Length: 389
Image (cartoon, rainbow, N blue to C red):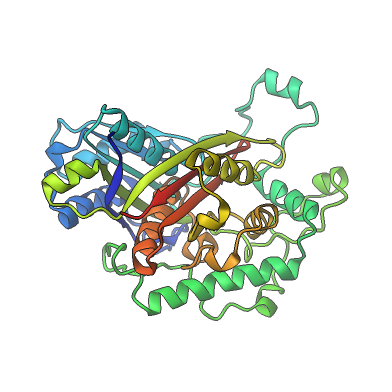
């Protein structure tokens, strides 16, 4: 039987998604091209052998329009014969790209593929693809959900209220994310995955001195009187400090079969074991990580205790804390190098960023199995299990 293994994984540093951010001067095509060049430079693979490049981008408009992944392939200097496509499963876009790449390799449609992603939130701000006055949902959605849906920040507040997650608990989780990321950088644990770009070598949003007391001084990020009236249970505890920031960055992984890796002299980092994707309540929107985790474990034939490392995207602290509450997972195995609250969340790049961090952490810690899951707008979630080789 054919399998799929990751033989290289690389990401850019992650910059603030602001006009003065460290990577704001880099076009998104160039961000992604940088990681593609990194893959072939580090692996020694001839890019002509790559059957397809599947990239994730969320706001596919402006400088991220017109199939960004294709132009990144060309900008990277790869042969014109290497095809590429760009997918959108919201925040999980590049994790979905990993699923597609692995499934293509296992099926025999590909012998080698790249999964990758990019988002430049300084140059293409969030919601740029939904101009004011535009209805992205249509009349059928209005009929099915007459009370209307809500922005992600309000969904996060609803989750915090549903699980009785206090401000202090969420701020403590956020501070811990910064501390773990700072410790990982200090120990050189990100060196193997980060390809410095234009003099930038570190993640810009990490705050080593973060404390629960300091984060307590931040105001609610999403308070709205209309929603406050509609949802009186909300306590407005979600802040910029216990949410992921806006960021610029790109990431990529190289996927092939074990047999092909051996033939080419490549060392697998991890085997892509099992996959799942699921839908959930589009009002709460971000809780799909729970059923996605359950689904992928069933498909893998594994239990929660079999998993040595978990990566759950830190879009909001409340999402990860709710996942912990529902699954009962060991928090000591979760996001061991920190997560998006500290590292950043360049939307389309985050899926393969998590995978990149996870495969290197698996090797560093001798983990046999690892699980990655991400919440996504619209009530979606991806999950996958990786296995050491």
